[in-house]
Length: 158
Image (cartoon, rainbow, N blue to C red; front, side):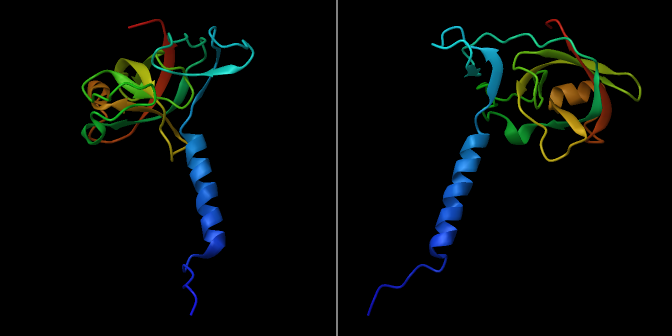
C-alpha cells in the first residue's frame, strides 16, 4: 500500500509558491531617487528610515477622498519603518515620498491639517487618495463619517 497523496496536489503547491512570490514583491517599495551610496547611481534605491527624505516635487492639488486609521494599528510598523501612533499628524499615500509634508483640506467646510507621509495606502478604494491618522482625521472632523472629500497639496515642512 502506497502513501496517500495530499488532497491539494502539485498544481496547488505551485500556486502557493507563485502567490508567495507575488506577496513578497508587494512588500518592497522603490524610490525614484537614486542612492548616492549605491555603486550605480542609475539604479533606483529602496527607501529606508535611515535615508534622508527626498522632497516631493510641487504639483497641483489632488482631489479625492480621505479615510483614517487608528487604534487597531497602533504600534505596528509603517512602510517607512516607524511605529504607528494614532495621536501623531501622519498619513499614508500611495506615491508621495516618505517624509513629505502635505496640507489636507476638507472640501466641505474648509478645515485643514498638515501631515507627514509615513506609510503607503489607501488600498482597495480607487477614489481614496490619503489615509489619515486618527488625530489628523479628528482635526478636520471626519472620524464620525469615516471618509470625506479633500484636496491634498505638497508643502514645505511642518
